[in-house]
Image (cartoon, rainbow, N blue to C red; front, side, top):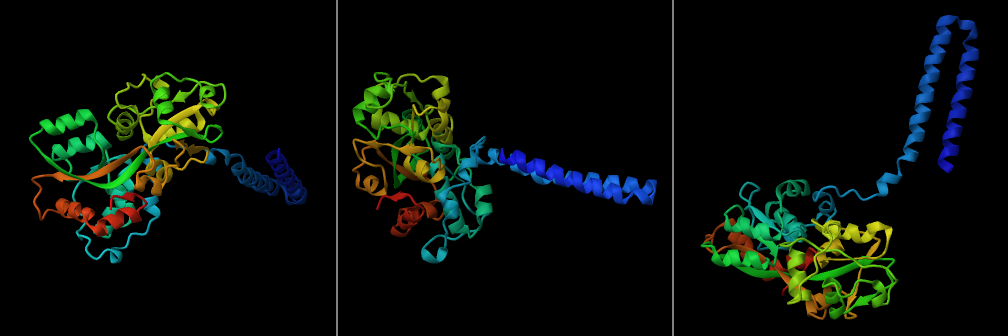
Length: 355
């Protein structure tokens, strides 16, 4: 209503100006009247264009993650200052000599920060150079010699089998620690879920929030696709030998941001449940209408993850091929990440370091 009144006032003002100009032009002849009409039209146009932005503000508040890159551009790594002066033993090389690095979605900020530190390049160069193709595919690309170094979460069982059967052997070491976390709509009254309850939800035994102390509504339990890092963690840490129930197509989120967005706004209800890795949910995709839920009463945070108090913990890895020369740039970066200084760097980027 306020926008409508404002627009009406602008048209009224324009009309008064037009009338004034026309009256003053009466004695100037036909040419003067035409000029006055032209000027009046210009004034009306300006009035309309200044009022219009008031009606286009609403879409700016809506999330627009149509591509997988959009949420990644708001990562913690981009706002973290990376200075080589803080790390005396860091490798240095040109952008041209930098190895091809791949990995999981949640390690993109770490990979970009590492690129900037080692090459001295800016954020724009890091954003255009670093491309992660997700967990399983990054391992495949390393095996195929399409990548030189990966920063990745644990591979799926199928990918581990391929790695074991491959003639190309990988050198892998855990460099950081993350956790599988569960997210609910902030309007959901349930504060904590147990191991057993989560397993029962995703095996189809529990289907209504009322059974968990919540409202009488169906649980919309979102999942990730097979082969994704978070799905591998879900099956390993939560489900173990219990099969997951097949999710409805609408409940399967291909991208990590989609599962968070789905929990935030699915069917305009607070009945959705989903999971992600801690770093991504906390630092890479901020959504105020969701929150992390406690598991067995334990809040997922850096201290409980580092100490192992939070139950669903999993490491992520740096990996190179075993035959990578010791003086290669990929091997040089790999070794540095394992050092005390490299571990400090990982922690400085907001991840939980191993050491």
